[in-house]
Length: 101
Length: 131
Image (cartoon, rainbow over all chains, first blue to last red; front, side, top):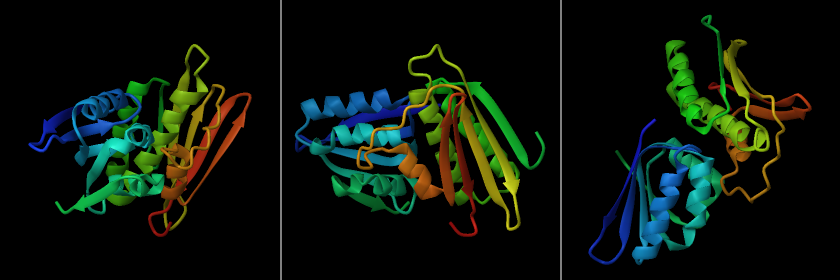
């Protein structure tokens, strides 16, 4: 099980939290910490899930906790992560952008 | 393990859920289950196992959880039973905010949860021909 999360600051004061790997019950603490840290230091956060190979309901709960500071969530078009966000209703609270490839 | 049945039993620990995901995914690939349906099945099983870890053994010393998958019928469907032996608490309804059971229900052809003194059994069926 591997998960790597990095936070990339942008010039405009916002930050992008990039998730690479699997987020589930065992690793969701890393996501929660990264989103919390970005919420304190950046003026807005983008969550990049294009390299997230697994993203479950525990991960969705963590994102809901920080939905107010999230500007956008980026996911691969037509993938299971996009479906999970839609079924959970997260796409009603945060803009979800689907990218090709 | 035969061609049409997989049985996995592990301790109900958060870090073991991913191990079961790999095992189930490898088996589904070996029996040539369609990739998109396999991904949904792995997701639903993982959610059911997370429920075991989070709810069933919360006030207990811990325990086991099992997954049984069997190919049934024609056209073939995958029939899954996820079992724990603890005391399960229903998730609070949180209007879909990361509700694992809602995700299971959306991805499977059908699913049901049964709880008694012995534990909880989540039974579900995935039919790639038409959910």
